[in-house]
Image (cartoon, rainbow, N blue to C red; front, side):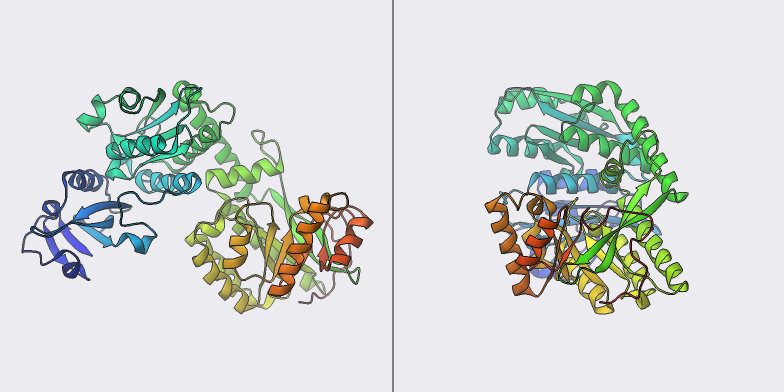
Amino acid sequence: MLELAHDFTIISADGAIKNSIGVIAADTCFLDLLTSRGRSMIESSAKMLTGANRLGPFTVSVGAEGKARQEFAVFLAKLPTATDKIYMVLSRPYRLGKSDTKRAPDKKTEDKKAEFFDRLEGLFEGNAEAAQNMLVTILEANGGQDIDEDTQRDIEQYLQSFSVGGAHATMLGDDKFAVVHEKTDPNAQKIDFAQELKRTTGVSLTSATIDASEAKLSESDNLRALIFSLQNFASENDGFAIDDIRKNCATLIGQTKERVRAFREVLDEGRFSLVFQPIVNLEKGTTHHFEALTRFELPPAIKSQWEMIRFAEDIGLIDEFDYAVVTLAIYKIREMLKKGGSPGIAVNLSGRSLSNVGFLSELMSLLRGNKDLTNYLSLEITESAKIHDLDMLSEVLVEMRAIGFRVYLDDFGAGAAGFQYLKKLKVDALKIDGAYIRDALASKEDRAFLRSMVTLCQDLGIVTVGEWVETQEHATLLRQMGVDYGQGYFFGKPSPNFLVAPTQATG
C-alpha cells in the first residue's frame, strides 16, 4: 500500500513493495516508476477521486530505475477526511485472477459487461465532478461484417487506451462496444473512434456519445437507467438500437427512471404479496413445505410478474426486493406460529443479489436474528442472473447451513453454470428444471438426463425436487427414478392460502 501526496510524491510505503520493485528513494514521484501509458492512466484516474469512491483494478507496469518493470493491478482511493492524499494498493495480478502476461486469457463477454457496469457505478454514483467531465460512447459494427476474435480484442484494447484509467471500456457483444472517456482530454476530444477504428481494423462502426453531465449520471437512478439502456442495447432489444440511444437518450433514461420510481413505490409501500405452491413427498404423498412466490401490483410500465423480476435484476434493485421478500416470509411464519403452527416456506434469492457483498451481510444478520425459524424457512438459489463470486457465496452458505437453514439450488440443468454451482456450493437439495420433466414421458434422452441427475445427487447425499409435475404419470415416473419431492400443478397451483392445514414443519 502506498500513501501519495497530491503531486504523486510517495509519502509512505507498506507491505512487500521493496521486494517487488526495489528500494524507493525519499520523495520519489510514483509517476516516474511508470511507463508513459501507465502515467496517463494514473493521472486521469486520480482526477476522478472524490473521497467517496474507489477506482480500479487496472494494470500498470511499475519499476524503479535500473530494474525491470513488473505488472501490478492498481486500486486508487482518497479518504473523506484526507482528500489531499491518494491511497494506492498494488497487487500482483494473479491474486485477482488475472494473468501477468500482456495477452491474458479473455474473459467471457458477460463477465466483462458485469465488471464494466460495476465500474460505471463506482465512477459516477454520487460523483458530480466525474459526470461533469465524462462522456460515454457506444459503438456498433455496421451490418454484414464478420468480426473475428482478434479484431474484437484489438477494438476493445484500442478503446481501453482512451478510457478513464485505461479500465473503462469493454465489448458489450460480438459487434458492440462501450468506452468512458474524458471530454477535457484533448486527444479524446479530437478523435473519432469510429473513423480511427475503420482505418486501423477495417471495421465500419456507428457510434453514439452520451454526455454524462446532461444525463445526470451522478444521480443513482439516472445511472441505473443508463446501465439498463446499455444492457438492452447489448441484447438487441426493441427500442434500444444505437440510433434510438443517439436520438432519444434523455427519453429512454427518463422512461427507465420512471419505472425505477414505480418499482421503488411497490417495495416501499409493500404492494406485493406472497402465494404458496406445495412441494410434496413423492413416496408418502404428503406436503413437505411450500415455495413462496411473489405477486405484485404491477405499475403501468411493466406488463407481467416475470418482467418485474427481470427489470429488478437488470436495473440493480433485485437485492432490495429479495430482502423485502425474505422479511415478509419471516413475518408470515411468525404470524402463523402465533396461531398454532406453520408449514415450511422456501424463498427464492437471485444470483445477482447473492453476488452483492452488502446484501449477503444484511441477509446473514437477518437470519442470525431469526435462527429459531430454521425448521420453517429455507432458501432457494436461482440462476436467473449469474453468481460472480462462488467462493465468497460458498463461505456464506456454510455459515447459513451451520445455523440450521436449508439451502436449495433451483432450476438445475437450465443454465450452463449448474454443475459449476453444484461443485462449488454445498447445498441440501437440488430442484431439477421442469423442462426435463415435462418431456420425460415421451423423450428417452430427457429420461436419461433425469436419471443421471438423480444418481449424481444420491451419490452426493443431496435431496432432489422435480418441478413442473403436471400429471400422475409425471409423479409416478419421478418416484420410480428415485426423486424425493415433486412440485407442479398436479399437486396444486400457487395460492394465497395454504392448500393443507398448517402443521409443525419438520426437517
